[in-house]
Amino acid sequence: MKQDILTKGTVEGVRIYALDTTNLVREACEKHKTSHLASAALGRAMTGALLLAATMKDAERIGLRFKGDGPIEEVVADAEGDSVRGYVGNPDVFLSLNEGKLDVGGAIGRGTITVTRYLKNANPFTGYCDLVDGEIANDITNYLYTSEQTPSSVALGVLVNKDGVVEVAGGYFIQALPGCDEAVLEALDHNVRMTPYVSQLLELGYTPEKIIQILGKGLDVNILESYPVKFKCRCSRDAVLKTLLTLSDADIESLGEDDETEVHCHFCNERYIFTKEEILNLRK
Image 1: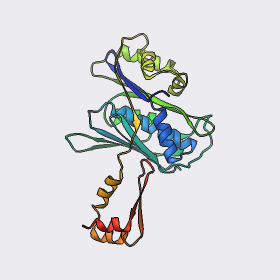
Image 2: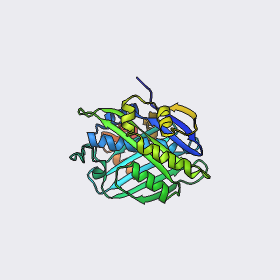
Image 3: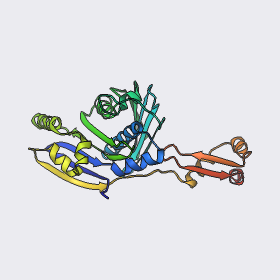
Image 4: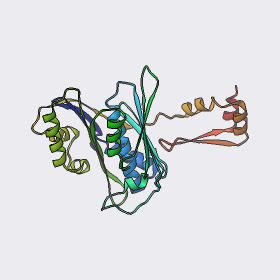
């Protein structure tokens, strides 16, 4: 089985990142038991989060939240380095196809995108922007331009088969660096318009490195590095206990009235069961 890979490259003053997230998106969707439509939304958001995390320094994290008035309620993704996790508000969401495609924009509806950057030696930075169409890629592109003044182009794709299994998932990110030649941007824009959907390229077996070379056709392409990416949640039984320790004595006493206390992690759908004795021992 092929690995999920993120590849970084530059093309004459422009950075291009591309990645294949097929396995990790499939794993996340299996954990959350998502519908076809919810799988597409979750896969796009997680892929987008990984692309943005790749622009940040080590140990810095980014969170994406798409909140609208549509039936999916919200789509959340959280990425750090080579790992990502995420969830949707309504994993059972269903809408009719929109021009033959899964209607992610209709599922999210009108609302906002929230981007939080968790910086290593500074307070987290949070930015907001109205959604453009709820299709996620366009919303990330618009956010980067309007809120962070970084002109970029983001493409995301998730292909789900008739049985609801994620066949391929991935995306790419193009961002001009300061001083980039306008002619290079025009050439890249032409290449993007001539390039098939990223899901089609992945379905044909193209690697992230090959996708970067296609996007940089006719230009000087420099591949910097490639590394594997994965689905990973930071929750654990110990981490949940540490969170419960922050509760007041009164709240702990209230939980201790039940024989068992269940804590659910939204990001990975894991459920942790604690006995009455474990809860009451927290006061010690």
